[in-house]
Image (tube, rainbow, N blue to C red):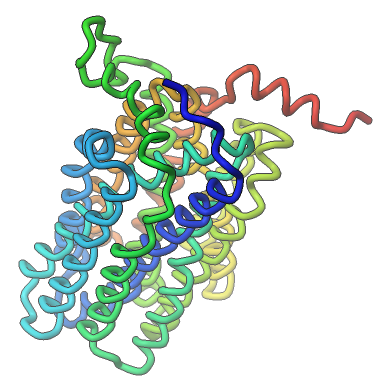
Length: 412
């Protein structure tokens, strides 16, 4: 049964709801990330110990990702996002309790695990909803959804810098953020696409889970899907390393106050947001692969400036790093959803591969930070960016989309 065409006002309402959920997800993450230097100091953690604590957020996400596609299929994207954001709120509350009021790293780890679990499930659900909205609109919009995420992180990071400067307790900051997430969970996803339309788009996922008689091969056996996953893994590592460690690196590497380190984090996030807002036009005009090649080179230069520059150059490097890494994750997600019939399976696979970076990243940078300092440990970013160039052709647009792009490009 084919669902009748969706009225444009209804489609735009779904689009706006996706924007809100992406923004809320960004706010929840950066509310914690902006207080990482304070949490490190309050819990008296070394770089390596902090890396282990941060690992629990990634572990929660990894556990949620493989089942997220099935949850969306059973409950719909709206209910899935509501439940996931509720988990995020609980995780933030526990993390704040463990940081300040009880002062136990194990409780912070538990809170981050719940936070990561909620964010992992929400990540898949909101990206699947965003991909379906993008398909129905007929033009690139996924980077702008991720720009909403980045915009949320910028706002939360700036608020976090102010909270740190005013010495506001971490628990109070995170509990306020948790209350906001709970309100968002109850309201924001309601205008998502109708469940009947989702069922039409997601019924194909039944094949990916072995329900029909003829079972297609697993997305884990598709070389192109795995290469897309590699691109997302590098993007996630490059972005996640900055999220977790840039503020600490500026504080410990350059001897800056905590608020100045968080400001560097906000600089990174601000320029990542700019890249995602402007990137949709570049992608439609020039294509995914050429744009990503240039953007990743910019990220490489920025990461080197952060490590080897003066404080002023390091801030410029944070801006370039954020700008350069801005399109990797959303483009990888769009590429995984190019074929609607395989979108759920492939998005789950590439998201899971990408989140391996969040598992490996915190302890890797923490281990290197214990031996060489957190600032020098950031050199690992540049190494992985070079690896991504091998896999970039995998995210190329389907031929039909590529032909339309060429037709729109003015000829000289």
